[in-house]
Length: 178
Image (cartoon, rainbow, N blue to C red; front, side):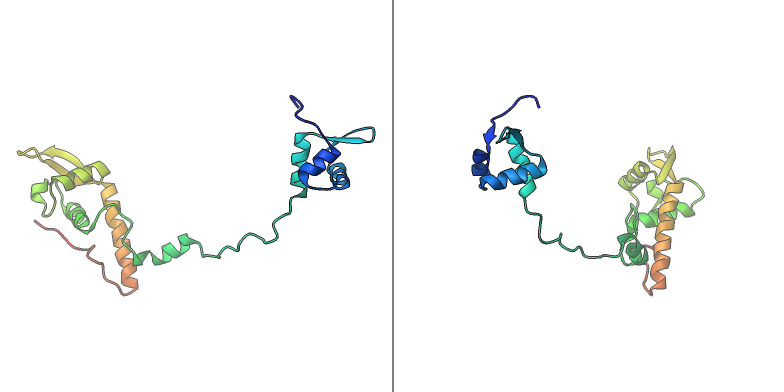
């Protein structure tokens, strides 16, 4: 203890805690929260705080019951076909990726129906395509990467799962041609 705060007699401690003199001494002796000089019992501020904690009533009702829920992961795995596929592209962009996956050489946005420069830039940033060269107008000539093919594979697995439940592809199977 660095310094001694105010020291209380048993009467003062009892008054402060709103207990009887004998009650404070009994509890203090039981929990070792007092000092004794002859027949007098003395209490520090820390002793009073310790006594207060000792006489605190524990909670009478247990914590509220938690609702038992099945693990979300299992439910999501079994019912993922009900929701959109977990991919970073929308249906139109998926059609563009499908078109690129069917091409042998690089294509520019001018050669891909429904794919403008912003779509190409987005694909480049996400790593779904890579730039091989530039055309005469300065547009990037792109080819699909393995990451782009992974997006297609995820959607194809999702479509197959929906088919098991008698559902259609929801527009995720459309094709782009040019």
